Structure formats: C-alpha cells, structure tokens
Amino acid sequence: MDSHFNLEPSLEGDLLWNEQFTELTFTPYKAWPAGKTIKVNINSGARSRIRLPLYSGRSWDIPVNPIFLVYLWPADGKSNLYLVNPETGDTQELITETGGILDYSITVDGAEILYSVTEDDGESTIISMDRLTGTKKKLITCSTGLCRSPKISPEGSLIAFEFISHDPGSQPGIRVYDLQTNTHSDLGAPSDYLDNPLWSASGWLVYYNHTQQGYEFWYPDQEDAIFLPNETGGDGTWSADGRFFVCSEIIFVSETLAPRHLQMYDLTEGNLTDLSQGNFLEDLNPSFSPLGTLLAFGRKSLDPASWSPGRQLWVMDIADGKINQLTDEMDFHHTSFTWHPDGEKLAFVRYNQAKLSEPPEIWLTNRDGTEKFRLIINGFSPSWIP
Image 1 (cartoon, rainbow, N blue to C red):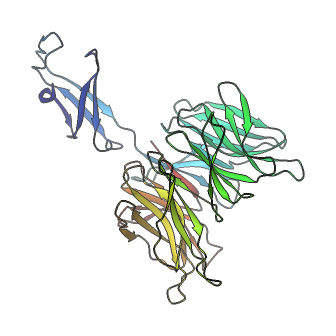
Image 2 (cartoon, rainbow, N blue to C red; image 1 turned 90 degrees about the horizontal axis):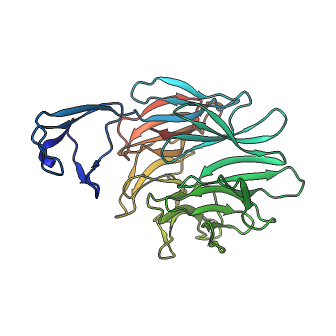
C-alpha cells in the first residue's frame, strides 16, 4: 500500500493498518501545514485485504484548520476573548461577556474553552463554550465566593480551579469538580492558601501552597500529595510527557544576593536539578515547548554592570544546556510565553518598564529569535488554538 499512497504536498510519516485491516492511519512526523489543503491520493493498483485491485485511483481534499492565537483584550478594561490569525493579522471577537472575562483555558483538543466570569448579582461562574457550535454551558456556579482559573484534566472529567470564599478570614483554595458526579472536593488544609492549579499530560495536578511554601503534586484517588519546598511560587510548566515540572526558586547566595533560578523536578526519579548557571541570574516564567526539550523563560541580570529594567526572552535546551537569547530590549519586560503547537514559534507579552502608562503588547517570534513582529496592542494572556 505504501507505494500507492501519497500526499500533496508530500509529508513523511508512518502508515499503519488496524488489526482488522479496515482502517488505514497516516501519522505525519511534523505538524500538518496549518491553513492549507492536503490532497490524499490512493493510486490504481492498490489491493484490498483479499487482494482485489483498485482499477482507478481515488483522491480526497482535506483542509487543515489554521492555528489561531487567542488572547484577552483590552488590558485596561473589561476583557473579552479574541482570536487573531498570525498569517493575515485578521482578528475577531470569540467570546463576549458584558461583565468581562476573568481568565480562561483551552482543552487539549481545542474543542472547548473554559472561562470564568462574575455575574451582576455577585455570583461567579465557570462557563464552557463549544468551539464548533458556539454553544455556552454553565458548568460551575459559585454563590459563596469567587471561582476562577479553571483547568480541565487531560481526560476531560475533572476541573481544577481557584476558589476564594466570601467568608472573612478564609483562605483561597483549590477545588476539583467532577463533571460526571457534579460534586467537588477541596484540596489541602482549610488554613492553607493555595493557587495556580496546572494539570500535566499524565494526569498530575500541581498547585502552589503559600502557607507551607511549596508546590503540591496531587493525583486523583491518591491520598497523599507529593510536596516540593519552594519559597518563590508563581508560574510553573510541565514537560509534554508530564514527567518534568519546572519552576523558579530563590537561591540565597549571600546576605545581599538572592537570585532566582529555574529548577526542574523529575516526578519519576524524585530529584531536583538547577537549570540556571550563575549567581547573578534571575530566571522566571518558564514555558516548555510542546515538542522536544526546549524551555522558554524570562531572564535578567542582577549584576549592576549589566542590570536592566526589563526581563528578556531566552530559550534553553534542557537536553544539552544550550541557551539562546531571543530579545534584547532593555526597557521591556517579556513574559506569558506560549509555544505554537509545532514548536517553531513563540508568542509573548511585553511591557515597557520605562513607560508604565504604555499598554502591553503581544508579539510573535521564531524560536531562534528571527522575524519578530507585533500582533496586538493592549492584549494579554495569549494561547494557541487549532
């Protein structure tokens, strides 16, 4: 069959029959060309399972959806969700809520968008929108507090989110809502201040415990969580296979010098690796590539001779330690790094630290730092969606 199967444009990949020889699957080595049409050809001469020949060829045209960038806009008002086609610059409003959208996340397959809003009556709600139909569904209503930062588990049955109770003296926490039973459970102790839930591809949930000063790794139906001491907190990132978690941690070098380094925790081996080399580096906001071993992050020097107001975008290959600086605008702070699904591009947000009145900007660059250009003014929180 291999010699009778071809694609236009040509793509290398694996061709595999199922056990019943009723279904043929082609898996490309690289991502499908977004926004293009693939022609699938089965040439004459191909034979069936019982060796009957195909006397005339067959072909099908399969359009590949473009990859869009989703973001919140405007940054200085009630934000709603928009998308932009990076190839054309065309933008459109994707989700509109009169009170604005607090934050959002996208399911792994890109089929649904989860977002949180605050209603006029003070209730907080987590809503799901089906991208294919545009249908909205209220998933979780929080009448006694604020629910935000929803993250859905890889298999789609659990939603982890931050819950901030209206009760005086209560601490923000993490809830996990079961979509099958419509019940929820609270993680950690009631006295703990928890935030930043994030699922891995392997089904682990990590969140930060401010009270205990560390990250906790929780797995459904497992009683004990793994605890990783950490005084910094903030954004962390999972590797594509869910084995490694990278976060920032403060390192006390002396009484007057305390840089922040990137540390990688291996859930399989249970060990911790310092990825930052040097006593005068401050590394934050790591973001793993969806492919391979590349890690994007923000860096600035604490050395008085090379200090700058802004933090620059760097990319490190954790396999060999090679590192590359992608931006060099000393007044601009670069953050919110998000990789294109093919791993070849990065979107990020930059802020002018010398002119704080200027709005944030969303930029796009190749992973080697070439072809940087501005996409959106006054937007923030970018994510890719097919």
